[in-house]
Length: 148
Length: 182
Image (cartoon, rainbow over all chains, first blue to last red; front, top):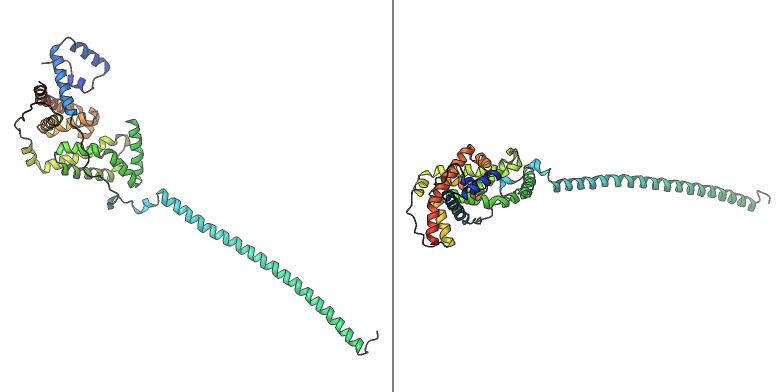
């Protein structure tokens, strides 16, 4: 029978603080019944710790279970989805911006071509008018209507 | 243990955002401990496995109710305790028969397998409450305060159950081991 003032179970389970531990050890050095109590407790705990943990027969996983699927709004919070969304928006925005700049460039080129055509046409008309005048004059000279 | 808590907290946060893989990782960290606790408590492998599935399913469904992620282990074992005792209550007549005193098996020399059998037999003779106290303290290493939280009872009750269990185990195991050694 061990002395009732010492909690040897707490001692064996490392449940005493340093001071209580030291007191218990000092007492055990001089009390054979407490030493016996402690030895049997340690033997019991050693025997209990000989029982090994068993492996889980099957892996517990829930990937395929319906209940573990994310709710519809949780899909939007996933980083992969957010990244894909940003990328898609960037592509669409880029498409709009590129198209606008292409339209502006085409309009500018068309205007330049139109201006160039206008100039060419004016030149041609001017040349034609000059040529026409020269032709009329040459004809008149040949027919004697005009003196040389 | 601190690192484990930090990583558990991270995995809990991921699982709360719907990250199934994060939760599966959390399960893989705890499944062995939970399974063994349930196995020793209900003494049936298939039941322990089914209960483990239920425990982790309930934990996932209620993860948002966990106020402090640092207390995840006690919270998880609280769910396991509830599931196990729910099953034990359903099959009460069988359990009572199973825990009637069995004749002491002769122990003539303690090989590891025999020692394990003797321990299993001695644990089987304890009441469910006593056995659970031993499982949580000796095998799972919980503090008395955590055990009180898991079992929803005062620390004094937890200590009383554990100490009574240790006295019974000591009476059964120590003489058998000493006989085997002699």
